[in-house]
Length: 382
Ligand SMILES: Cc1ncc(COP(=O)(O)O)c(C=O)c1O
Image 1 (tube, protein in one colour):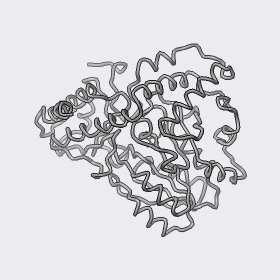
Image 2: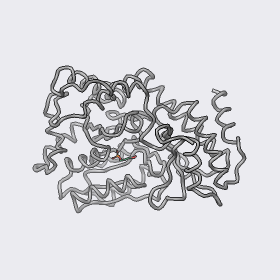
Image 3: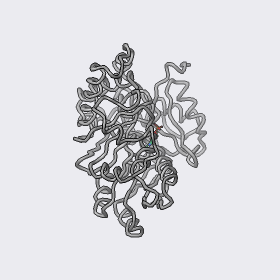
Image 4: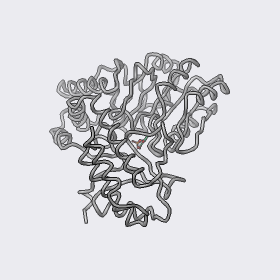
């Protein structure tokens, strides 16, 4: 019914993009060494800093989010370093794989898919591996819909005297991330999620302790991803050609974010997340992520019995909405919906009502309207 170019993206990234962002990107490409571009870069960086409350520089790299994951390890980890990877999903596993390429002293705190990682679990893992000097965590595990308690875990990691690398790719810009107050040593995010841009940019920021540690990695073999080389340059003078037009888009998106206000944006994401979860519960479906660890930007729901997961996604697509299935071993068992960036009451009403039709069509034993009524009541009762 709807062609691909009219499909609404309710997957957990890439997301729907505001027309003002496209408009900004569709401008003349200035030379990247002009004062004009440098000013746009500086302005975008400063605006970005306010979304995560940091005074540290934020590097804007051409590369997807995984570039940030890779460079965190390539710049910080020496082959003799002991690293603890906190893993409870596909993206934590990716971090583990990257770590394995740089050190053979890699340890894993693995939690079952769908479960959150508590600060106490981290404390026990660090007691078991006292040599660990670097810990990695996926703040919002997009594959399972789990939000790990980053602030509390950071406290445990720093009590141990280790540095913390945090993948905030699907949390920052939508949910709360406080880089300085939470003591995040290495922050990573990406453009195509809560920051509301097309894919292609990776955002990186690191603490002075992380910078000091990087200086001890005497032979950084990562040329393109040498973050100290990037840090040495004047703001806006990147070692390699930056993604100029994406940075125009970033500036426009950050203007929209700051116009809404970061706090209001967090409140909206949390509310949309809660209403979506309430809708799934009202339909009698089970949420996959453990209670108390549920993400506000992506929700995972178990595919009900006697229900064909492919028909759920296909029907949603027929109605013009793209949702995501499970990854790896979760394929066929869960479906995932992203509620990031522009998702507000209007979009939520549309998503939930289409999902009801999709579930019904796929064989689920639900009553049409139970979920949408929950959303409507939740919206009215505020
Ligand atoms: C939590 C998380 N980490 C890492 C990534 C990888 O980012 P990218 O696909 O931009 O390389 C994703 C992408 O979905 C993600 O959600």
